[in-house]
Image (cartoon, rainbow, N blue to C red):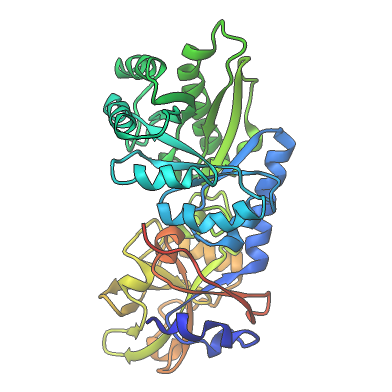
Length: 410
C-alpha cells in the first residue's frame, strides 16, 4: 500500500518540509481564489456552468468548483469520477453528469446503473454509437428510455468530434432524431488547441469560434421549433479565463453552458498562455535532493516520471524548481529526476513575477545540498495529480491543514 494512504492524516498541522516525498501539495487559498474567479465570471454572464472534474478528482475540489451546489452539472472522464461524485449527489449538490468520452460498449452497463442515482448524459460523434445504444436497448428487459446525448463538435483540436461542415453531422443528427434509444440534449466542443494561445485576444477569438461552431450545428434542431431547448456547451481552461469577453446573444431555443477543468489547479502549461499568473498554480510536488554532481552541474531528486509525468511545454524540462526557476527537471527515469540549469524567456518571467532566486550560471553545489527538499511547479496538473494517492492541503504558510484522497481508476 502506498505510504501516503496509510498515514497521510498524521501530517496535519505540520510544515511541508516534514512530509514524506514525493508528495503532492495543494494550496487551498489558491484553489479557492481560482474557483471563485470563474464562478464570478459565469455569474456576471448569467450562463450555466459544468465543471470538468478530471484534474484533481476529489469530493472537496468538486464541491468547490460547483460553488457548493450553486451549479449542479459536471463532466467526468472516468466511471470512477462519477462513482466518487455520488457523495455529492447525496448531499444534493449534483443533478446530472456528462460522461465525457464517446460512449463505449464496456461503459454502458455501469452507466445504466449510475443513471439510477443521477441523470447521465452521453457523448456521441458517430452513427455507430447509436447502433450500439439500440443494440444494448434491444437486449434489455427494461422499457427503453432514450439516452440524452451531446453531439461532439470538432472546432480545431482534431480529437473527438466532427466538424460543422462534415456531411456526417446532419446524418448523425437525423439518425439520433429517428432513434428510440437516444435524443439530442445538445452540442459540445472543447477547444484543446486554445492551450497554444498566448494573449487574451487570441483566447477570446478561439472561444468565439467555439460558440459559433456549436451554434451553427444546433440551428438544425431549433430553427422554427420554439419549444425545443438545446444546450450548447463550450470551453477549456484557457478560454474560460476570457469567458467574460463572449459577444452576441444565442438564437432562441439555445442555452449556453461553459465547461472547464484545469482552472482550479493551473500549471506551467497554463502559465505559458499568459492568461494566468505563476502564483495561480495551486499544485506543487515536493521532492528530496538525493545527490549532487558538481562535475556536470546537476542534482538528482526522487521525483521522476511516475511522480511528475513526461508532459512538456514552453517551460524547459518536466518541472521547474519553485524558488529557483532556472533549475528544472531536464531528464527523468521512472523514480528519479535530474535537475539541470536552464534559461528561457519563460523562466525569466517566473523570476520576475515571483521574486525567486536568480544567479546566472549558478553552480549546483551552491544551490542544493543532499537532504534538501525542493518544491516543483509541474507542466500539466491533470496528469501529475493522477500519479498521487493523497493530497496534502496547505495554508498560506505551507502548513498542512487537511489531506484529501482522490478517486482512482477508470
